[in-house]
Image 1 (cartoon, helix red, strand yellow):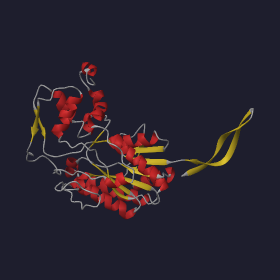
Image 2 (cartoon, one colour; image 1 turned 45 degrees about the horizontal axis):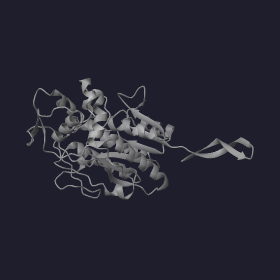
Image 3 (tube, one colour; image 1 turned 135 degrees about the vertical axis):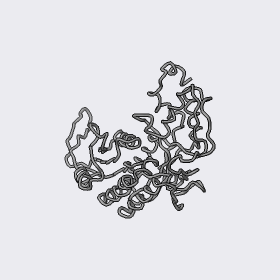
Image 4 (cartoon, one colour; image 1 turned 90 degrees about the vertical axis):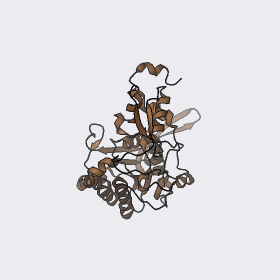
Length: 335
C-alpha cells in the first residue's frame, strides 16, 4: 500500500545540512471507504481512520452532505463507481437498518439494505479488505457465551437479515472479516440515536416514575472502541493477508437497561428512585430479543487485536454531557 512520490531527505555532514529531493520514494498511502458514515458507528469509524493517517472517504444518504459523499447503496452502478474511482484498500461496511422493530415493519427494504447491498459490495470489493459489521442478534441468547464458531439461531428478522448478510459477504469475498458487536452507544446527534443513550430521557424525567426492562442482559459497547478494533484489523491485514473470517468484540460490563439507567443517573449524580425495574417482558413489546447473547471474544484477543473496553460510566458521561439540561449539575457531575 504505497504510492511513488517525491520526498525531502535531510543529510548532515560536519558544518553542513542539505535538503535532497528524492524521486519515486515509496510513501505509505492507505485509503478507506466507510459506508454508513453518517450513522452512530460509522462516524466513529470514519474519525478513527482519519485521525490515524488514513485517506478516508465516508458515504451516507439522507444526512450525507456536506461532510460525506451522498450515495444510495441500493444503486449498484453508483456503488461500483465509488469503488472504482476511490480505489480503497479497506472498506468498513457500517451501513445497515439496525432497529429490530423497524425491520419487522419494513422487512423488504431492510433486507435489501442488510443483505442485497452487502452482497453487491462484497462482489465489487474483490481484492479489497472488507470489514462487515454484524450483531450479537444472530444468536438466540439461550446458551451464552457465544464463540465465533457457535451455530447462529436468530430470533428476529433483524438478526436473520444480518446473518444472511454475513453469508453473502463471505460467499462473494472469502477474505472478508465479519465483526459481530452487541448494543452500541457513542457520540450521538440525538439521544434516540442509540438504545442506550435514549435512556437519558427517562433518567432526566425525575418527577415521574417509569418502568425499564430488567430482563434482557446486555453488554453496552462504546463505538470508539469498536472503531479502534476496525483500524487495528485493517492495519494488521496489510502485514497478514490471512486475517479473515468471523470475530467478536464486546464491552465487558453486563447490564439490563434498568441497570444502565441507574449507572447513567449515578454518573451525573442524578436521582434514580423513580426508575422501576420491569422483570417481565410485556406482551406486544415488538421484535423478540435474545435473553443473553453474550459474545466470547477470544479470537480477537489471541490475535492481539482487542481493545480494552472504556468503562461505561466514563464513556457515557462524555457522550451525554452535551444533553445535560440542568447545567448546574456540571459543577458536581465528576465529583
